[in-house]
Length: 495
Image (cartoon, rainbow, N blue to C red; front, side):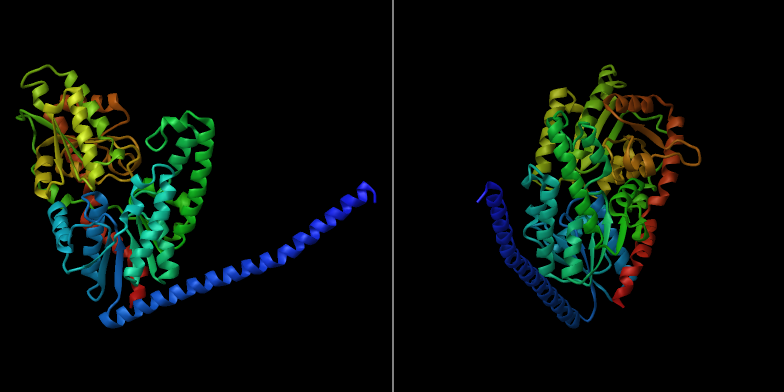
């Protein structure tokens, strides 16, 4: 037999072998797929049976909010409590549940915290479902591939929530989009979402593809061509999965023009997406007196925001140090200024971050002029804002900026980062008048603060008036009206 014939014979034998393996493989795939479908359908039937039994027992439907950090003191939590208050006032015959991962705290304590921090009191009691595995969505658990790790972790946390309680309507109010298919297709729930910040944005993709060092793109990656290419592919795959998960949401609400732009690009659902500005407590803050500050002996610069890394408190401290360096010692110079950092700490990691910031103040020699106020009650927040001259917010691409609005409503002259919600929605001209200042870096923020302090009291008063008038569109009442209108299609299914 020639070499050619031997090769032909080997090829025929290989084809016959592959064919004999193909049929068993196809059969196994079909069998496994059938088993998976049967398992999913069984779980769906079991979960819906639980919901039907619960509804028969309670005699009314239930709406559930997924908010694992509901006891934190940030703007996202204010949205949660205002949304609950609005729905409770409108729908008297509906029960409400909050899935939370907070431990070591009771439901009444959480509600009391909402009252103290946000001045919000719910008209009726609600039920809390305490989840035990919130660690699955903690960034600290995933030092690498953090976004996909948290996304997968949120699926398991969502499954825990669903097995604990099956609602009729599910609302993701923290941006855990990968939980929505779990409730939609396994729980058979109607689904809505309020997006504060997209899990992944086109800005993040651009920063990586352009090898631009940012908070979410460290130098170790931006300086390496291969790692940057790998991260671009990783982000593109995550963006695709993120968009697929979003198809589960019947109603999509976003909190700013910046978020709207990114969500429309990633989720491609313009017909079910609407802009609902978050609620800011302008009603209480606009009651603060708005007079000339010519008699002030001390000017305070106030920052309002959770102590998270993206808020960039380090930039605030460094910019403040530059302002102090340009001032002479004395009652009208350095001693006339103070920086007040007000914010909530969600966990030990945030508390450690505050310790690091205190250390930075010591290192830069400004510790005597910087105050930290953690988890303060609403009345203390209002008092600090009422006494402040300048409001400070340094987060790059802040999705909205409730702290910015609160400062403007209270009558401070705002300096915010020239990006995201502050640039597009908040620190914008009002009837042609200036409402604040925008900056991008340490020198820019220092220059803006110096410029504000150098203005005449009358010029500052004019900016403060414009700012206060401009934020009326971010009131609690405006939010409730828009939120209820957006939720109407989903809430209508409960009848």
